[in-house]
Image 1 (tube, rainbow, N blue to C red):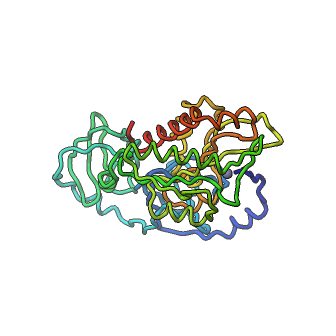
Image 2 (cartoon, protein in one colour):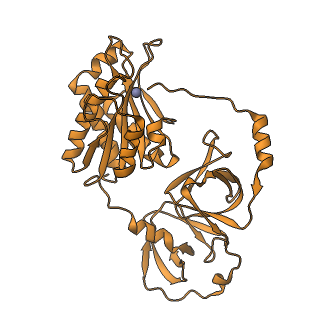
Image 3 (tube, rainbow, N blue to C red):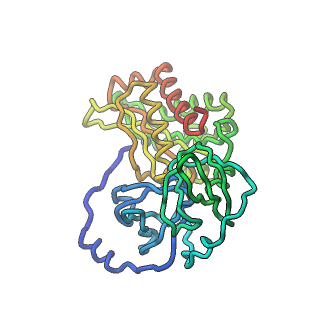
Length: 352
Ligand SMILES: [Zn+2]
């Protein structure tokens, strides 16, 4: 699959759109996904300026289509409404006046990195500190929605939902996870064409079978969107993933016949929360193969855009490079590629 990057933004159009946005008062955004990118403007093409995390709550300043501008501690930024719940802002601090009563539990472990602790039991209170993931805090008291917690010098209020959601998170490890492997192209769609006339679809299929075998040995349930050399629509590839997958990995090889010296491996994500999956897999692929590291990048590819489960697309090498085309036909190199992806998935699912 070749990538096409479009640069250039019509600034005057943006100005008009900005002027037309409607202010929204007294609403706040509750983040529903572990990590959500905050961008400098209302669209995926704007720069990422920071991240927000699950169950954090931010006042909404304005809305524009499927984006909202939120107030962060020292700045503002835009997030997609796809992964948030909009709720009415609590108008009073009444909850704060309630003395926090004795809690039924003595201790909690902080489930997420840099969990916000506030000076009172509401998001209107200022943040007094950030709790490190894995730290044990003594529970001093609780209100309906908040715990009052303390660890060494750090004391503050922590939203109960944080702890509850972490406990609900699915079991760690790759065992019993469903991995959907999508061998790119197939049938009449041969994909990219290699230096000696080989087809991308055949490499992608070979790698997919090998990957299936390795993941199955580790106890994962593995599904192939394309179990043989046939044409499968992009739509049915992603609907497969949307029904079943704990992770979806689409396998491709690249080609730039005009630049036959280009080599390297790259991994693409579409939805910001899949960046960590992309990073794990990319890092381990490079470690195993020693290939040129083309890094991870946002990629607007149908199969990962329309998949709402953790999904990435890997470009495992350039078949337009004669030397690489030869290497990719060897079992030894295929095994390295597969081992890299397996190691990345193991890290992602917390096997270490
Ligand atoms: Zn492709």
